[in-house]
Length: 208
Image 1 (cartoon, helix red, strand yellow):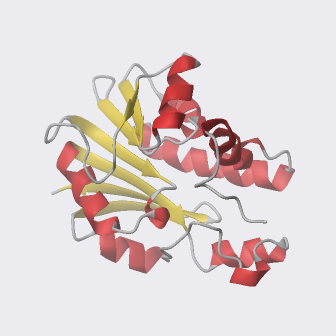
Image 2 (image 1 turned 180 degrees about the vertical axis):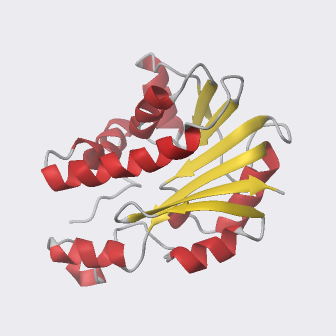
């Protein structure tokens, strides 16, 4: 039975979103490690004085991995779901967590050197509106990741997942390959790097 986001408690959401990060399968762990190495490959060139914002942090699992990549940079995260934000704050999450919508970030123009949006854009009804906000708040860099389609769905079907929807993960309403996602994000900035850790696409863009 598909996970029902609308009827779930914050605790249920936290556990659901954390599942893929805690999968004990060695292949899954290998793929996830490659994903975070791709992120680290971009962040590794940043200055210690940089300010970094991760939007849509969900359960904070990606944030904990990103923290390990940093070398003194200011780092904070935000999430739309108020229940998740409350859970993270009550658990004394090690970085500042704010509640905000990706469509209306409560941030000044150019207030962060880098803004990140990982595993979120595929869920959004208005991806272009979200991208506009990311590039408004970022003064220099934007990092985005999305599933690499149709590889993502093929891999889901190969492991017997979501066969009734041809491998589409519930909640994924947008589907991009490298060319189509680069074309979309290029409306807002300049693409300087594309990494493809199976089965994701990681984009590094510069603000025009």
